[in-house]
Image (cartoon, rainbow, N blue to C red; front, side, top):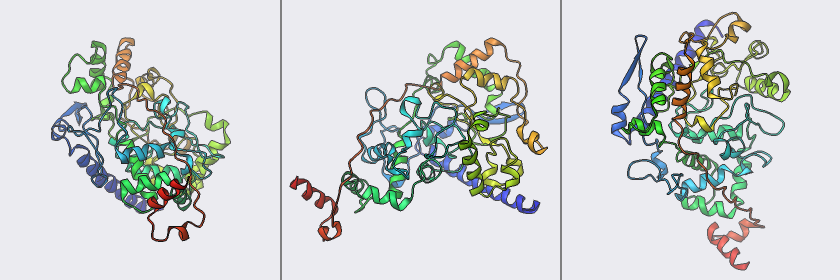
Length: 438
C-alpha cells in the first residue's frame, strides 16, 4: 500500500475508533448522571490534562436485552457480595460460558481460558488455543469487561457479544456457526430457556453471544477499597495506598495512560515490553500467531521478520502501529497475574520496576530500523518506599475474589423424526410431552 493509502486507512480507523469511544462513553455513564460530572474532572501532568481517576459507575446495559439491574443501576449482588445469577438472561449466559458445545470439537469453553479460580483469566503467561494451536497473548480477566469499549489486546472487538463470537469462531474455539447452533437446538433445556429469554422457537446463535455478554456485564468489582475511597470513604485506603495514588498521578506519571474509572485510556502504546521466550520454544505459538497475521492480511515481509507481537498493526497495517498494544485496565490485579499482553511479568513489583526504568528497548527499532515506542516513558528514579506505595495502591483496585458455583451443563436430547413428530406442536410442548412418557 502506498503512503497516501496508508494515511487514508489510518484516518478511517482513527475516526471509527473515535465514534465507538464516544458511543461507549455515552452508554457507560448514561445510568449515573453523577458519574458524568465526576468524569469531567481532569488531572494535569507535564502540561497535559488527563481524565481523573474515578469509581466505577453502573455498567452499560444494552437496552434491548432487558437485563435486570438494581435501583442504583448496578447488577444485583447476593448476601456475600457475589453477582446474582437468577436473571434469566444472565443465567443462560452463565451456563453457556462453561459449555464446551461452542467449540469445534466440543472440548473448549469460554471458561477454559477464563478460569474462575484464576481471576477469570488464565494464570499461565500465554493463553490456550483450540487443540493443535496455541494463543500467543495473555488471557485477560472478564471481570469489569463490561466497561471496556475495546476488547482483545489489539481492540479487535468493540462489544462483549461480538468478542465472544470472535473468540469461539477463531483461534480459541474453531467453531462452525451452523454446527454450534444445531447443537443448541438439540438441547431441550436450551430450547426452553431461549424461548423464555428471547421468545424464539429455537435457539439462535447470535442470541447466545448476547446472553454471554449479559453474564459478563454482572461480573463487576465495583466495591474495592479504591472505589469506596473515591465515593467518599476516606478510611477505605491506608496511608501507604494514598501515597501510592499520589505517585500514580504525579511523579510516576501512570495517569498519562491509566486514567478514568477503569484506569485505562484504551489507547495503544509500544512500551518495549520484553519478549516472551516461550514464543521461541513452542512451534504451536509461532505458527498460530503467523497464521492469524496472514489471515488478517499482514504481509510476509512483516510477520516473518518481526520477533515481537505486531499488535495493532495486524488490524490496521499502518507502520506506525507496529508493536502497539491497548492500555491494560488496572483493576482486579490481585487475582489476574501474570501481567502484560504476553504475560511477561509475574508480580506487580515487576511491573512497577519495568516502568521505573523507563520501559524496555524498542523491538520495532531492532527489527525494522524505526521506532514506535511511546515518548511518554522515561526513568522515574523511584525510591524503594515509593515503589512499595505504588504496588499498595494497585492492590487497592481489587475487592473480593469472585467465586461462583460451576453450573450444571444441560444434556442433549435425541429427537428421532423430530419434524414429523412436532407437526404444529411447539417445541417446548413437545418436550413436555416426551418427558411425561419417561
